[in-house]
Length: 229
Image (cartoon, rainbow, N blue to C red):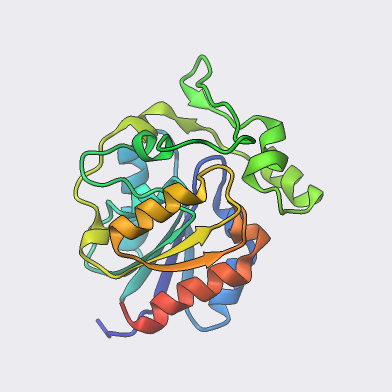
């Protein structure tokens, strides 16, 4: 493999899908990169890791792996030698033996964060008002309605499974810290990014900068790409 990064794989978080990366895909592709938005089933943590590994198997060459929110835990489990750097976008980063719920529930939640509970099928849905109050408060009403209409629930096993040794211990890592995040408060993001020894880019963005501030996201990813992993 060449030392030059040729692929970027984007991994969406809970209550979202690949479309949440919006113009991030187009901006990255305009630089000549091969860009793939990996689909997560959000059924179990193992299923989600396997989904990312299947996408990694389909690309050739050095790759930057990017995770938003919940997907931070998932990208940390991908052990392919193709992965030369990780980028966390307002993302959760449990350490070995921790769960997503452990780090998500750390500290005091934002006053406008939604109350979350599983339904009869063991799935957690985001209340409609949460898209305006916490998930994407900086988005246009039209964008919020689209994201709300397309939301995909997350199953309890995704957030209660302890992770193994995360790959951020072994490869260069960048972290976009969302200062206006009401889902994962900035203090929690600061704790995780410091523990990871990540290169931090702090910005006044909400929980979904992939749609509300794509330039900041793209610039952060390109820092990892240009570093060569």
